[in-house]
Image (tube, rainbow, N blue to C red; front, side, top):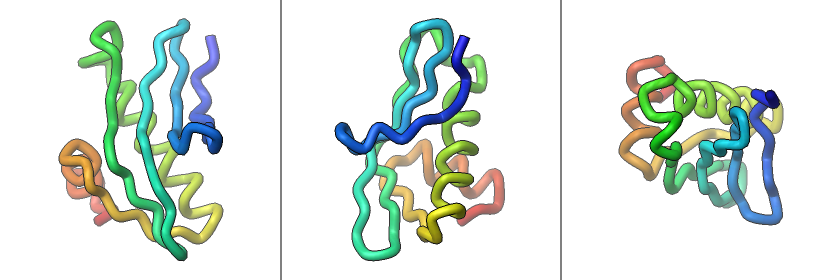
Length: 86
């Protein structure tokens, strides 16, 4: 079971693989800003906290690379507000 958030740069998305189910966040980068366009978890992972763990991994990766994060996706925006990262 792999539960590390990975950056799939070829697809421009972050991924969290949990037992073969992949939660993902599509993104784009402009300058020093990472825009989170869409976050999705498959039905089997909904309600398990997978999307929140994905967001935590994204925020860590963005901080390591010096990116500001701008949520376009409603879920990402709500998660960032709840976690005081917006």
